[in-house]
Image 1 (cartoon, rainbow, N blue to C red):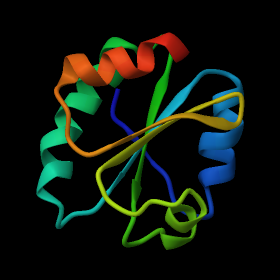
Image 2 (cartoon, rainbow, N blue to C red):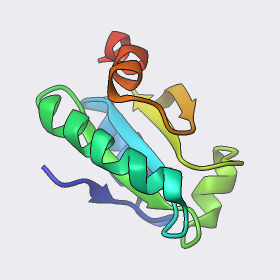
Image 3 (cartoon, helix red, strand yellow):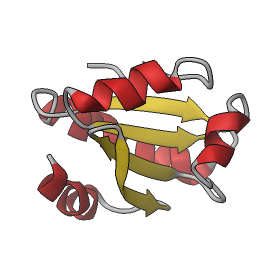
Length: 108
């Protein structure tokens, strides 16, 4: 499953509303960010492995500053897990896959 690219205009429907069905992990990133490029494949792997219980959305912070500001994204990569329309877990910076999984699994 590829990630779902989300924009300022689609965020409400694609993340907030969708997270009422099953959790949505949102990857806030930018094309110029090396740690983002390192984290992306790990996040994609997790999304594939956990596709039955969560979905993945990506937000390019350069192109979607409204949503980035709304959730106080100060540094990237930032991952926010949304559940029932609310952010329930926020992770900032690169981390190994096992640590990332351990941080979000209790919410799935």
